[in-house]
Image (cartoon, rainbow over all chains, first blue to last red; front, side, top):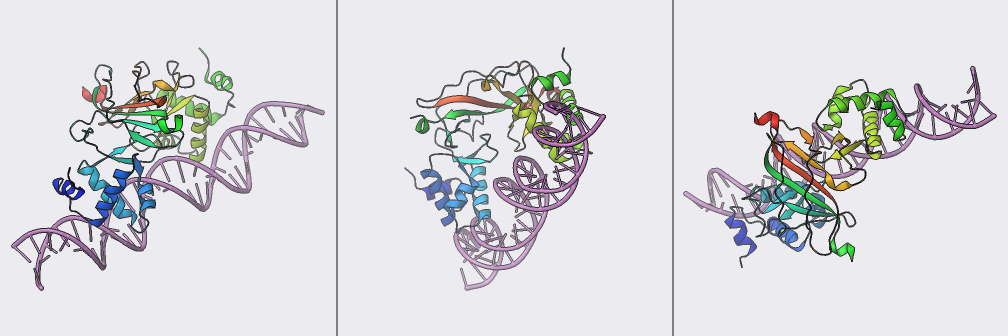
Amino acid sequence: MQTIEQLLELKNIRVTAMRLLIYKFLVNKQVAVTLSDIENAFEKADRTTLYRTIKTFEEKDIVHQIDDGTGITKYALCEQGCSCDINKDLHLHFHCNNCNETICLTDHKIPKIKVPDGFVSENVNLVVKGICDKCSR
Amino acid sequence: MQTIEQLLELKNIRVTAMRLLIYKFLVNKQVAVTLSDIENAFEKADRTTLYRTIKTFEEKDIVHQIDDGTGITKYALCEQGCSCDINKDLHLHFHCNNCNETICLTDHKIPKIKVPDGFVSENVNLVVKGICDKCSR
DNA sequence: TAACAAATGCACTTCCATTGCACTTACTAT
DNA sequence: ATAGTAAGTGCAATGGAAGTGCATTTGTTA
């Protein structure tokens, strides 16, 4: 069990108060968040800082970007099961049409997709939309 | 073989010069287009008209929206093989990282995706990214 | 502690999506 | 045919999200 500080140092990211707060926020959130979500949670902080923090996290493979089709970029922590730094091919996300939340299904792998001759597949973005477990009860 | 006029009437869309032009443009284009693409093709027409035309087409299931991860919404004609009005589950698009074009692979079905208990899958958005057949030669 | 590098905050810009309103065009019923 | 109504089009403006430049602050290291 490592502390957040240790994790950031491991990734060669300088530890700052802001980054610790944002990281903790992401841990507590079980769903993917937009920049606005973070902004609303930290009204004292500047939007640019939040923006650049999340971009830093993204570069260092601490979070990954999710494009769930709502048109707004979302971010979620890369879990241990999430090997998006090694293999970019296994993103699988679920977007709830009811509560509008997007979650990572890290333990659900993406099946092999066949593409026509001449096409080279490098990366797959798969978003399943429907009703999440909370809303379907 | 039906004319474009007949097709529009069938879908309860009033036939106008603008709509015919835009429809023809979409037929000629073999790839998904952005609003800006259409705008550049019809510089005399207003952006709003093009926007609302494409929205009308979308509502009537003449075109479908594609979110290929570039952040810009694209549109493509619903082919006969594209039953996005009946069954929303078969979108499959290929985005070329080289030429930046997105095409519909209508004859390539999306495999059944398993989701955890409690989740209800209604719709799947699948975008494969890589190198298209033109660019890989 | 001085010096340098990185992080933060403020202001501003750009781009795409969307809407309100006035005007024009196309259909409908007399 | 024509008046009246509904739909389509064009202009202007707005809003939201993403991104950048620069000055200031904070943190690290010699």
